[in-house]
Amino acid sequence: MSVETTEARFAVSDDQQVSAILLEPDDAGCLLVFAHGAGAGMRHTTMETFARGVAALGIATFRFQFPYAEKGRRRPDSRPVLQRCVRAAVAHAKAMRPDLPLLAGGRSMGGRMASGADASEALDVAGFVFHAFPLHPPGKPGTERADHLNRVEKPMLFLSGARDRLADPELLAGVCERLGPRATLHWIEGGDHSLQVLKRSGRKQEDVDREVAEAVGAWRREVLGFCS
Image (cartoon, rainbow, N blue to C red; front, side, top):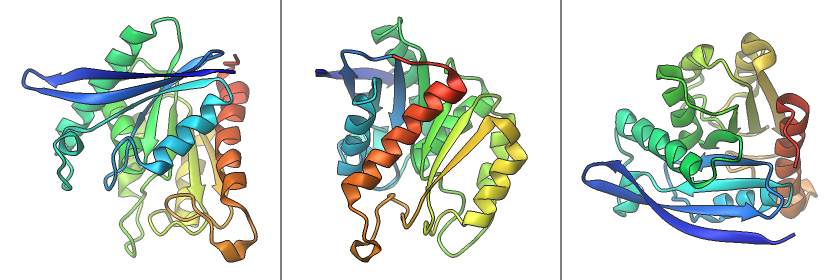
């Protein structure tokens, strides 16, 4: 298998463009538009590792910068700006590869902005992949951030660490139970908010990263029915 990397840019507004990366294996069966989290951009190691992992299973990814990250700022843009960027990314990914079914999602905040955009006005995607959905702030358990998911009528995959301080396991399990068959929850035993495990867990991080990618591949086959 070979993997091709294509750098791109697209417009979020009349006066703002952002960068993007299309990572495409030669056997790609679908394209995942994947947004970064609040604290790091599209080139962060976690983003790159995830993209390479799913590429090995025939899933292309389209990663992109939010405007604040493109400008080198630390404070995220407003929710409307972030969601508008997600919409623009989905449209640009579709234009680049109109032959591939689209998925959307992202790491932490990026995933929540993708589903939030869909809850406001449905995106032209088949489902959502959440890499550590940020259910609540650290130390402040709650489920309000997931309320909009009731309006998302597509399959959703939640990849969550069992020791994630931003997603209490019982609360996240309850959210997924309420969403019914639309939601698939895959726990990463010992994983934190970055789906990283401690050395004393006895698990190698590369094995965990492979588990994350394989969970996406299995969900794609078993729930969505796509296969390369």
